[in-house]
Length: 185
Image 1 (spheres, rainbow, N blue to C red):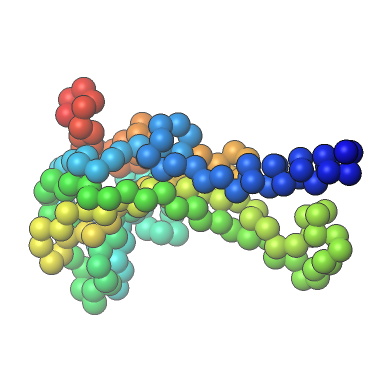
Image 2 (cartoon, one colour):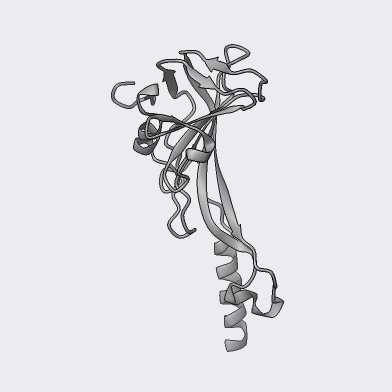
């Protein structure tokens, strides 16, 4: 009997580990905003020439190199880079879909030992961040297609998706967020 108990427990643990987390469930992995949320851009945002993104952190415009990726930030993503600077004009964008993705920075080791993989000597995530990708209603050719908001990069056990309060702090006074069913919506 003992012979079957150990493999049975291992199979049960394996099946439990393979369970997926529902993205629609409320809890740790729930999105800060959902479909139908309105984002009202208060003033024009300038997208530099040659780029397709404009970053906001702590309510300030930032160049990519000046974004502290260990703190929450957001960026508007255009369809493609442009050879000339352009502006995202004040407008109200409606979120059509929301996805939560994981980004990781891997630690690469020059030598891998297959037999010692359980000791952490292989390539593994050093830090991760959860990004909330929000597909926006596009009303013109120069409008952003996505708003992406990232939680802070952190060790896997500490990383968390961006929360609504953090999203509001990252966007600052540039963007008002109106979530359906919440006060002020």
